[in-house]
Amino acid sequence: MNGPILYCGDPHGKFSHIIDAANELNASAVIILGDLEPKRPLHIELEAIRERVWFIHGNHDTDTEANWTHIWESELAERNIDGRVVILPDGTRVAGLGGVFRESVWYPSIPIEPKFRNRQEHSEFTPQQDRWRDLVHRRHWSTIYPDEFENLNKLKADVLVTHEAPGYHNHGFQILNALASSMGAKIGVHGHQHDQLDSSDRWLEQGFNSYGVGLRGITAIDAQGKATVIVPGELDEERDHRQRYADVFKDLES
Image (cartoon, rainbow, N blue to C red):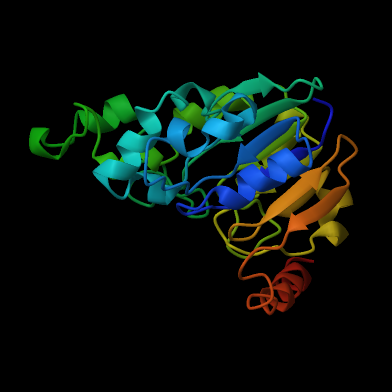
């Protein structure tokens, strides 16, 4: 297939619009940006397009045992690109960083040392009754740890997909800008914030084109970084006021 690459905002349990868009546009790849929350095993939810699907997990994917099981024990678990780089059919190298930063582990916006470097270290301080699959608490399966971040930082990619937003967003993280730069990525795409803001006035300074995809939205992005909204996010209009916050945030930085 030589169709577009589709980047899909947090579906929160709804996938029919993704399947429809992938089939109608003959998409070559479909990348879901976290918070999948499938009601059934993911390979069943996405059976119609399973050979084209890649994803990262979001913070809500560890909220319940069902969410976790339907993703990590799904036949599509191997399509989670968190912490690695995959090569799509058109040759595009896509890196993934799923989950979120949490103050109880590591919150880069606060200038203090991480409390834990990785899940194994964290698990040693986690009571046995609180461990999930004999590791950390289930919630922390969607936490970003420094060692995972640094391992990804050693790789190269054309596109970096994250659940968290990079620094252009007033709820984002500058460290993700540094990650994209180090990896050589020219495109960064994220979910989580359920909005789609225009950050184009920052692209030159950042060194990459940054895009947010809204709640259940879908955006096609080509190799040159040109984006086309296929399905607007459900909250895009309602959260349009966030654009003003983003612009003010930028002015305060400069």
